Amino acid sequence: MSNRGLIHTLKHLRGNARGCVYTEPLWGIPFNLYAPYVSLYMLALGLSDAQIGLVASIGTGAQVLWALLGGAITDKLGRKRTTLIFDIISWSIPTLIWAVAQNFTYFLVAALVNAVWRVTMNSWTCLLVEDTEPDQLVDIYSWIYIAGLLAAFVTPLAGVLIGRFGLVPTMRGLYVLAFIMMTTKFLVMNALVTETRQGRVRMQETAHQSVLAVLRESTGVLRQILHTPTTLYAGALMLTLTICWSIRGTFWSVLVAERLQVSDAQLSLYPFVRSMTMMAFFFLVMPRLRRTSYLPMLVGLALFLASQVLLVLVPPGHTGWLIPITMLEACSTPLTSTMLDKLVAVSIDVAERARINALLTVMVVLGSTPFGWIAGQLSTVDRRLPFVLVIALLALSWVVALLGMRAARRATSTVSVA
Image 1 (cartoon, rainbow, N blue to C red):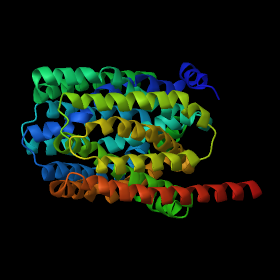
Image 2 (cartoon, rainbow, N blue to C red; image 1 turned 45 degrees about the vertical axis):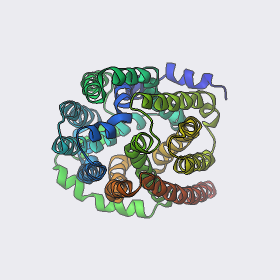
Image 3 (spheres, rainbow, N blue to C red; image 1 turned 180 degrees about the horizontal axis):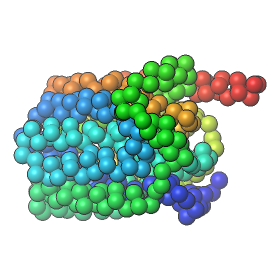
């Protein structure tokens, strides 16, 4: 399959997939501009490693409630309306709080408000997937990730601004920019999408029920998950990889800045390299994997694991190793992320997508909640220890992915025989 297939998909997107994908850069660019510096911004405002981990854990804990309610809210209000309301709450408001943050309390409040994104992630996923052909999912998820990678073209500017104006003033400006661009995205996307067919069905079915009444019906959905091995393995992979990505996102900049002695201004080089490598991988490799099995996920997990082992082994001051390590990790991300997204999408019962998504998310959030605090405590002892934890979790993920692939093959064989 030539890489023209990816471009062809983008040009011929229709309906909700078009509205979701075309507007995604308005969220992805500002998020990826400020994300590499969040932990350093918190350190600069006086937070300790342990407090950074605590904010992450409390924020994750708050996500449990919203993840639990997310399916019921999405069914009750509809995919489109839920996405608009909760996008504005979970991103527009926190970016303004982060822009004026002064201490631990500001970050804690922002994390609690930002936790609402678990609702909109459910509704937005339903908007994207429900009226979309399954064969398009790998391409569509590839474009979602590429939308965030577009920030690579302006990421070096963040480093220049930090070098000239300092970390804190630059971050405040980036958060204001994020507020403007993200809010614009939410409004424009809302104008481009329509309620899905399944969304209209669920809105009618829940029209005379409260959100709590809809939530109480989830017991049967939970039994359905527990009796579907592919969905269980997908949920387990979501859990382990969510923890890994969270720890990596929170403590990578702390490790390379404090242990490997990379300056704040130079830090922008590595997200740039990572983004450009991922973009090349998306265009040159991923289109060839559109109709493959989930074997590439095992390769991606192995690459991710190797990159973290090398990161832990780099001696202080030897920053030359960071470029190849960053490129290795970047190659792993498209393989793991898009294949996991596809696995989750195709393993879920269409009629109960919102509530199954919600319950899977609850399991993931509950399981990952302690790890921000744990990683913070480990980082206090040695900045490499959070990544040792990531290595152990990635090894577990590889085993889970292998078992999940076998379960998926058995399920397919059963359907074929039937």
